[in-house]
Image (cartoon, rainbow, N blue to C red; front, side, top):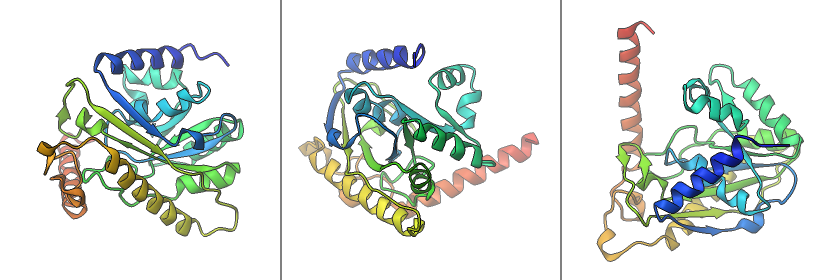
Length: 254
């Protein structure tokens, strides 16, 4: 099928990344199938994770990933037409069943579907609690479930961060496929997925370039000697942000 929007967007993104001198350190490409459907379960710390997480698939037979994203992105006057043109999958959190059906339909036709099972970006940079939708999709479509870690994008564009300095590294690790089956305990498999993602995160940080002057860096998890919020602190921040958003909605009557 022709991709009149997706292919030019990929070319533009690659050109932009090259202009920033971004170095990609990708491990585990051999775990991505060259054909057939698969669910990619990806951690989420950056507004650029969609773009970065699609690079390994592009390098494996020029494959494309259909990402699941909140429906608000599809309503934006700029991103909306692009997201629809790339045939990504809108997720209405009030009615998520349609997004689930759309994702499974894509998987059954041999597509790669990218999922961020943490739902929102992690302020702690750790793996948050994850939902079981990725597992259920893989089972419904009878396809592999592949964990993936992207690390470094939060140094460029993340919560309160907009830094386009040259020479950043983006480290990506693709784990071995999981093969959940009907009859499995979905919550147990989801916890196994989270554990694998946590292990992959540690492996990714282990090889990430950290210099002598980076001790206590904000872009490293507290558990790894950085000054990012702990998971408990991150949850407190999230609760405060949710309360502020709710107050604004009540003031505007929306």
